Image (tube, rainbow, N blue to C red; front, side, top):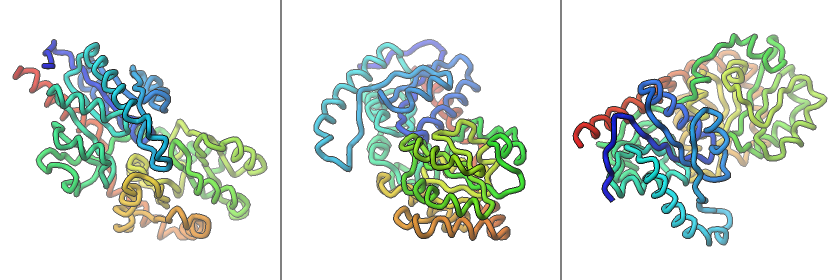
Amino acid sequence: MKHSQFNNTIRIIIAGGGTGGHIFPAIAVAQAIQKLRPNAEILFVGATGKMEMEKVPQAGFRIIGLTIAGFNRANILKNISLPFKLIKSFFQVRSIFKNFNPNAVFGVGGYSSFPVLKYAQSIGIPNFIHESNAFAGKANTWLGKNATKIFTGTKGMEVFFPANKILITGNPVRQNIVDNGYSKEAALLHFGLLPTKKTVLIIGGSLGAASMNKAILDNLTIFFDNNIQLIWQTGKPNASIYEKAVELYPNVYINSFIDDMSAAYTAADIVISRSGAMAVAEICLKGKACVFVPYPHAAEDHQTCNAKLLVNDNAALMVKDNEVNEKLIPLVLDTLSDEIVLQKLQTNIKTFSIINADDVIASNIIEIVESNTKTN
């Protein structure tokens, strides 16, 4: 199948999702493309039943879901239907391409990106990958060989991708986090908290973090007794249990998902977080002292790689997931009580901040697509 050329309107498919770490940067790049080319047509392709099917329309973009699932590492038997779902997804992708007629595809990771990028490569459409982590996923590594260009969140990715295709851009951060309209006092009041007390922000990612949540739950009284406030994003699993537990604690704001993360970061003196690439990018941008708790079952243990990049430069602290119960809360309390350490962490992490990754990625995609259009 030879791809037909078209008018001057840029038509781009953005593929991927599964977690906020893939979805929100994809949205940031889509918004940057629209800012540079207001008439651009953008279509998202995700996985049916995943959070992109909710979050992408909320941001004002159209999305189509594929019937696809990822490889289940925990239960091998659940992978029996995987080949059939993959084959079905390729037929779905072919139909999407025929109807939308894209002139570029941008993949942000997540298993729904694989069939879309693979199909684009098979018919010769410019295709772009963004690898946000310090350790590339297998799908992106496979796709990288035939990608037009590969945008990376960190340096040193030549071990995974052809060096001549790499552009280090950093990781795109949601515009509503970059554009902060809050003073610290206003941010605290937004969550019903006091400007006179130290505040800890706990974010376990969009799906929650069981080990972190348990450590917080078990130590609510300690935080209260030490005049420390919490902004606690629990994730959806067991949210009602955590909400019930904090009813008697006026020092805690709790929610399964915090929409206004700009306010949450601004209010915090220290952050406890998983170390997915996008969480790391946001925390760097906001210049916050942080204790990372890498998710131990992430593919290729990439969250530990992400955290160590900062820990090795004294820009963050880290606690292993299996040591959370004994080490996390004492470390947070000690750090909060030492202004010199807090300031040092804030200063050092800010040096890793990249503000305009979305604009750099968008402008590179547009430049290559428009150049490709003129030569065809």
